[in-house]
Length: 122
Image (cartoon, rainbow, N blue to C red; front, side):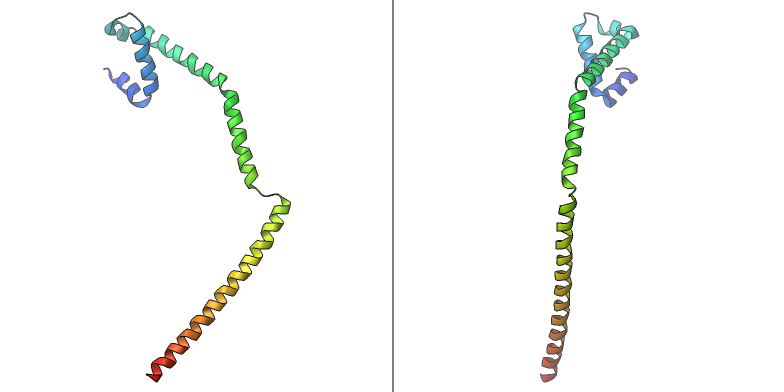
């Protein structure tokens, strides 16, 4: 296998597969097919036409997919009422967290003092 076809095989295996299929569909021998760049170029041109047609045919689907993704993201962004609602609860959660941390600090201080007293008593 020539180095350029090995590169095609490694880098773009689907095009290589189409080239191989085109070769198998024609009745030319491998040496003649490989020696005539016109056949390979013709096959590549057919692949290019097929890919261009595929992209045109599926352009609407691609646009619809992008719009659907943007709508999913838009649904995640809260509106004005939701932002006020979330802000209210965020403040409440912050206050509750602050109180819990302060209670934990007081408990740890009390515990430390009681352990000290117990150690002294022992």
